[in-house]
Length: 134
Image 1 (cartoon, rainbow, N blue to C red):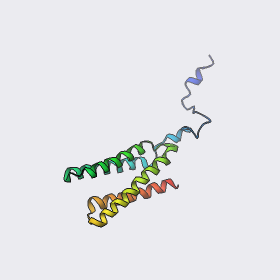
Image 2 (spheres, one colour):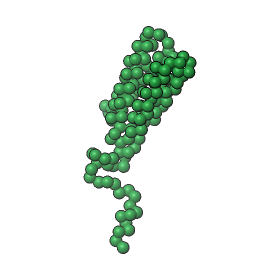
Image 3 (cartoon, rainbow, N blue to C red):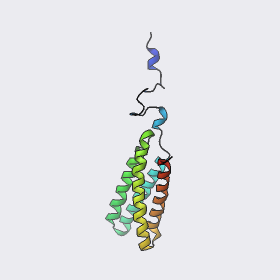
Image 4 (cartoon, rainbow, N blue to C red):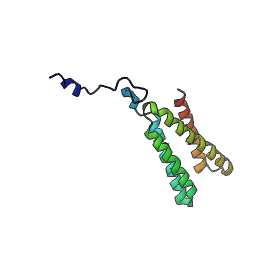
């Protein structure tokens, strides 16, 4: 038989159309910021839930869960060539939170939660920028 080798190949590859699809094998590898983004999303969600439980703040809950959802969905797509778009979305969220929570910290002088959120968001912004402009 002449066709047996084509079935058992395993490492074949799509060939040719690399720009519109995954292309090479390493293109589907998770981005290094994927795990950090998921942890950031969990931190934000946890903070929003804590604010709701302690103070009944539905505004904090919905804002935090909304940002966490966007971050988690973006982290999910941080694979190969798609990672840049996801990093840009995450950068926008992190910069927005840095600005908003820095302002809140300046007004309230409360390290928890405004100062922590501002600091973590600023650090994440720097990390996203670093990877976007590599």
